[in-house]
Image (cartoon, rainbow, N blue to C red; front, side, top):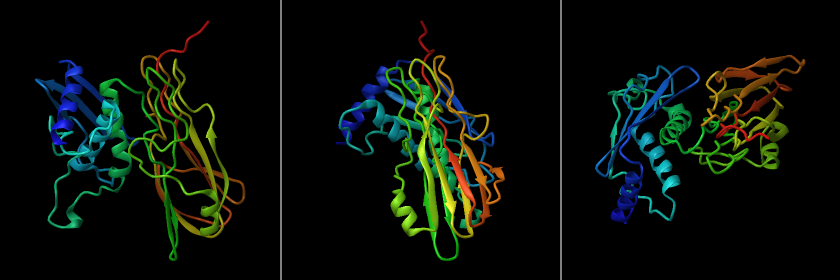
Length: 300
């Protein structure tokens, strides 16, 4: 099984040719992830040199996260029932200097870099830079849209889908948990029955996917009313200028938005990552990003 997986990856590497492929993308706070793909005699070097240094917050990843994202991308491109094992990465050499993706290990937990959002958000960006370097798909929503609510009696955590990027053959999917998210969202009936919330809206965010010959998928709109005072935490991305990019003339997908509607009707734009108290009657509106489009639209 190891040999079968390794041979399949070697055939895929041979199809890439000998050209150097490079790409980079950015988190909302300006943190960069840079990649170079270097084929060489049946092997592939994936080099992250130039990636931003260790993050002062919790957006650090680890080599294990990088490897998992690479596994995922290769599985999506090779096709077939490829067995999931170490043979997939046997022909791949990773170069991950000390940086956001490989923080040094401390003597104690307090001395180690925080990796909470690295597993959720940075992993999504790793996938996008891999797909971008390979030129096979536009950017997805690039975030898991993490929403956490709770108080001293309970905690609830969900991720919200968005648009996936278009390819040269098809439109992106709308309103999906894509790439590294690997979760599904709680049914509205269960959500409202078990937690102090009311779900006002859960719908496709029409027109948020980037236009192109093939359009990016649309994001979602999720509007939640809090029925008691709670603590709200958000960890999101693609909320600013770094929108999900298109390919070959395709437009970028729409950026996401986090909006808090207070009981008195006043609205407040929330940061991409924040923790704050919310009151009974406040409503959170999450508009998730769309995916990037592929190619210039056909006219006439």
